[in-house]
Length: 74
Length: 266
Image (cartoon, rainbow over all chains, first blue to last red; front, top):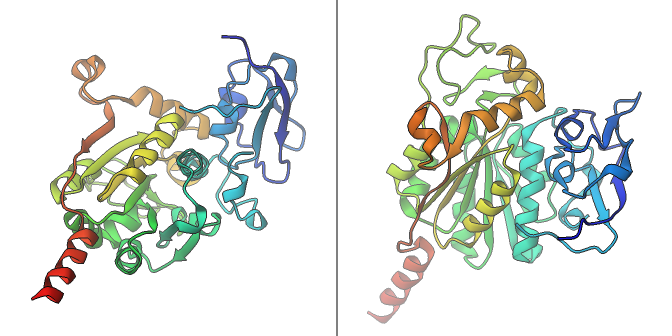
């Protein structure tokens, strides 16, 4: 299967409480916490679009937009 | 985001602490509703009191934030009067099984088409970290500085014994299972119980030296296994995840409609 191309990481800064779950669980080290303790996609180009951060965010602050948006079902 | 339409965004950021597992449950519960394409005007969320019960304020469904432990009692009333609606009751462990213990077992027994979600973080978070009937032995809480001596309930065994017809367990780490089991539970024509182990880093984790939210989540990965796995046979201490029962039995509202029918004909 072709690797999905990630268009953008939508992160609602005001919703993020900086728990760091997304940072720890990202398999590619894409996310970091900035000096304000908010998640930012520091290495966005490494993202494989697995959406683990989106699904594991307790603050519902992250949404991954893929190039060809198709909703994953599990 | 796909689930934005189900949120009352004006109440965000939510009240839960950084790293709270309840947010992960909300996140993946809404994906279940989205995937089933349930009309949000036909969804009712009924909750009681506690951290977990704040969930009903965040969803754009019909919502009832009711008395401590009484979510299932109110939900029973809603479902009896409007059986066509989908009714979901997210509860905390204390709310469901201490304050609401009696309501819980009788709701299981009646087999009304309700979905009970027990977000089990093994502590009363909102009131400052008192131990609950799900804490188990050897746990430090504000009310057990010398560690608990109380044994815990097993939600799965209790639900099975009480007669629930759909019973499942997963954890906040296993987000795909949360969505899948809630989907199954919502579609199940009877009383469903889904237990979700949910981390409370603020009270349970901190007092019991379990580390931050990520460490607590990793613990769920290490301490749980699928039902009947080889790992469970080797290590009986592991907590099983999966669907423990899925069977049909006469549903209460359908039986009640039938009863009315019979009474009118006689």
